[in-house]
Structures are given as C-alpha cells and as structure tokens.
Amino acid sequence: MLMSSVFGRFRTVIGSLLFVALGMLSACGGGSGASSSSGATATPSACSNCGAAVVTLTDAPGDFLSYIVNVTSLKLTRSDGTFVEMVPTTTQVDFAQLVNLSEVFSAKQIPAGSYTSASVTVDYAGATIVVDNGTTGVTISAANLINGSTSLPLAAPNPTQMTLTLSLSSGGPLVVTQGSIANLALDFNLLASNAVAPSNTNPTTVTVNPVLTASLAPDATKQLHVRGGFVSADTTAGSYVVDVHPFTNDNDDGGQLTVLTTPTTTYAINGTSYTGAAGLTALAAIAPKTMTSALGTWDATGKTFTASSVQAGSSVVGTMNDAVEGTVVARSGNTLTVANARLHQMQHAGIAYSHQVTVTVGASTTVTALGNSGALSIQDISVGQHVQVSGPVTAATQTTAASVDATAGTVTLVPTQLVGVVNAIAGNVLTLTLQSLDLVDASKLDFKGTGTNTANDATASAYTVSLPAALSTSAIANGAPVQLSGLVAPFGMAPPDFMATSIADYALSGAVLHIRFAPPGNTTPFTSLAASALVISQATVQASAQHTLQVGPVHSDPATLSAGIQLVPDSAASRTEFAIVHAAGQSVDSFSTFADFESALATDLNGTNAVLELLAQGPLNNSTGALSVDKMVIMLGN
Image 1 (cartoon, rainbow, N blue to C red):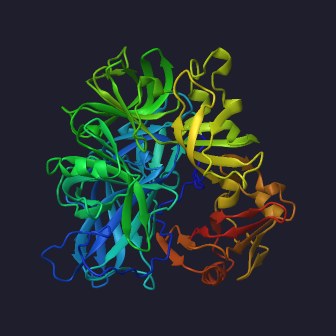
Image 2: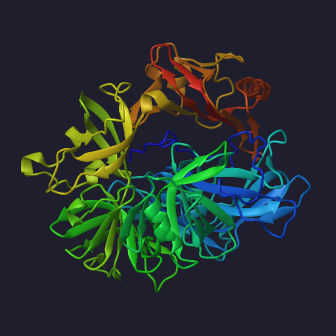
Image 3: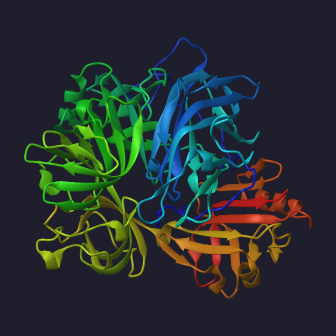
C-alpha cells in the first residue's frame, strides 16, 4: 500500500531494540502565566511550582489497517528520579488512525523540573491487529502476535504488556518551568515497530519491537486533534476550554487546554453548522462536560492551539449515538460501502474494526463537512471521501457485513488526503495518476457513478483536482508526486473529481533513503566518513539486502545513482534529528548536529561494529546524488 509519509516504506526487524529516540529535545518555556485567554494553557492546579506538559501522540504509517491496543501508562521521569503519570486510566488507541494527525494525549500540570526520559506501556491483550494484504486484510491472532524481546506470544499466560522507554539526552531534556507550557511530541512508528512474516501479501505473524521517537513540537505537516469535555467559552477572547479526553477516554484527569478560534473556524454542533463568532456563541451555550472535538494547528513558538474546525455534542462521532468512521470505497444509489471502518456502539466500550460496513443514507440524513458551513446533502458523499456516520449499528454476522442506518442520522465529511503524480496542469486544474485517497489504494476504489455520465466517471489514471486561486502550482511540474487535502467532488457531478484546499510538493519536501544490510551487517559501509559528508558507493548499495529511495509515492532504485550517494548536512533545515542505535545493547545515542553525529559514528565504526540499517531523510539532488540530511538513523549490531 502506498503511503504519503516519508517514512512510509521503512520496514525492518530491529532485533530486540525497544526504542529509537529521534530528536535532541531542547529546553522550552515561555508564557507569563498558567491561565490566559491568549494561549493553549492548562488551568492552574494546587501545585504552586508547576507547568503544563502538553503531550501529543502520532504515528508514522505502516502496512496495517488496524492497530488497536491499550495504552496503560505514560510516565515522565525527572532528573532526580521522581516521575509523574500522565495517563489517568487505560486508553484505547488505534495507531493506524494516527497517520495524518497528532492527538493531544495529556495537558496536565506537572512539577517543574528537567525530565530526562519518558516511558509508554502498551497492552496487547485483546488487540486488533489487521495487516493490509492488498485485499480484505488479515487479522493476526493473539497466538501469532509475538513479543520481539522474548519470542513469546503477547497473550496469556505470557505477559501482554510492553514498555517503551525513551531516554532524552542530558543536553536536551524536557524542561518544565512554573507557569509555562512544554510540549513533548511522541511518534509510534508502526513500520519500524512490527515485522510481518512471511510477507504482507501472506502474513501469518507480527513480531513487535516497539519504536518511539520524539520532538518538542507536533509534526507541522499534520493537523492536531483535541478531544475533550466542554468547560467554558470566552466569546470576547475567542476561545474555549476543554478537559482533555484523548481517543475514547472519558476520564477528567487529562488536564485542561484552551482552544483558540478565528473568524473562519467552522463548527458542527448537534448537527447544525456555524462559522466564526456565531459558532463560538452556540458552543458557549452547551452544557458543561459535553464532548467536543477540534482539528487545528499548534504554534510551537507561542505554545498555542488554534482550531480550524470544531464539533460538539451529537456531531462528535461515537459519543452520543452508534457511529462508524471510514472511507467510502463505493456507492450505489443511497447505499455506501465504507472500508477500514471503526465502529462505535454505545452498548460496547471502545471501538471495533470492520473491513467493510454498509451505510444507508436518505433524504432526512443531515450532512455537514469539517471546514465548510454551507448547506450539503447526501449528494455530496462520494467515493474516496473520509466520513463519520451516526446511526444505529447492526453487528456483522457470519454471512453479512455490519451495517449502519443513517437515514435519520448524520454524515460528516472530513478533509481527505490524496496522493498522486502530476500528469498535466491547466490553470487551476491538476490531472493526476491517483495513488491513494484517505490511504486507500486507488485500485480499491469503485468510481462507478461519480461522473455526470459514465464517460465522466473518475479514473485513477486521469484523476482531476480543482485548486483554489490561493494555491500556487508554480513549483509543481509534470511527473511530480504531490499530496493534497480537501473533499471529494459530489457524487455524480465530476469532473473535477476532487476539490483541494492544500497542496504539498514532495519534490520540495524531501526524500527517504533506506538501506538494510544482511546480518551480521557491514563494518565499512562508507567510502568517506567526514563532518561534511558520508559517502556510500554504488557497489555498496548494490550489495545490500534492501535499498529503496522514495520521494512521495514514487520509488526508485538508489543504485542507479552512478556516483553513489552522498549524505550531507541540510543547512536549510529548521530542525535536525540524528541517532545511533545499538541494537544488542538496547540503547540509543541522539545528536542535534551532523558533525557530532559523524564524530560518534566514526568512533563506533571501529572495524568490529557493523551497520545493520540506515535511514536518511531530506531534499535530494538527483543529478549529483546528494541527499541533504535533516533526519538520520544508523542501527549498529552491538
């Protein structure tokens, strides 16, 4: 399955490695008080020497349709050995759904100090792990979900929990100061954490060696999601406060966060749409503890969260009614086929995965769209669209799929990610070779009925996208891989097939190089090892067990670069992350500069230690073979 993330094809078995700590975390602070209407703050607590620790969680994509597990603990440990527990109760998480966003996991007030490590405990009891095999997906049984450290199943009577420990450099701890806001962004890398055997097309076992990475701010390319019970609103300041309830957690001990809004923020409150001040006024009138959900952006400098869209009450999926969330892969009349579905049933705690769900809509179905306050109807629901559907759920049987009756319910259209390669540019319209919609491969989408007539039905080989005038195509060229976000065009009204609201040019954002050497590894992988560049010859690349180069959805063979590959520091990068992982010792050394990284690597490569894996990310110069590295991980066998 083609993934848009730069880490989307990094698949490896990392022995007994428990973690990779990417990112030198530097001290953070700022802010003049613990409560303010101008920032994303936590409300004051009884602690007189506390600051807010906003912890977010995301995931680099992997070949999984579902990865539902329980997070039972998230501890931050201070330099004096004391720790704070950030998770008040067991929280169910589907990491497969965290590819395109970051979730605020906690915003608690914690004692000031220098925090040097974080540990996350994941419980695999009752886990739902579904591998994407290109068709219906394969559910991995508990007996075939293996703990990579013990080689035993993650099922009773064996231990079902695994603890991921992230050690932060002594030179870059998470610093919490009184009255300020610190942010720790955690990334659970599914591809690096799981080895599927014998292959994704015929999976039988998944071996788990969890990998966790971290930085001081959420990935700026992803939207931030904040879910929580409503506390209060300040219509003058344009903000509101929530008790943080991540994912399906309804416990009130996740801390409080202030959400900023703008005149263009859209709202869906109990099925009614609003924009700007009218929406915030309507939100201010709802009852305390009513569930809210907001998508927006995090300002790493000001430590503020600003919402672009807000949902509340019955408009929040799975809080007041049965619901399903997934991707529309086909439509026939008023019947939708929703794939990769997450089912929320009020009589059951948590969520369940279903490969496909049948959804029935009708004239009385209320349709809204995040980021759009206009009047919509069921005609706006088309193939490839990410949807949240509210209505009674009928569970699957041995002969029938699960179904949802939304004829008197609601459907919310959620901004959907598109990945493709540009074929042509004409004014504000792009024609693409479509790779995926909402991370669903284009081959799985049935476009019948999407066009104004049969001849105009969408096709993956010539998928058309309209762009607003504000989105420039000046940096986009034919053959360029792109990622867009927006809404699929209404059913039966294409072309265009998709209406974009944002666009990213992969050719400008960078490439990913992944090289794996067969055990016991390569003791001399570099022909040159210097602070200015690491050089890998073409012969070394060709001799490796696996070598891939990816720019967006486009894959090529790095061995075609006749001069080999040069890994040089990216002088234009705003944030750099380097790490040397010692697999056998289950430890990691993190560095903030390429020079320090190269110096330590030169010491480690003493003729005995061998490189097992190499992952590097940054802008690529195809003509010279130079990859300007802003992220890099070297895995050694020692």
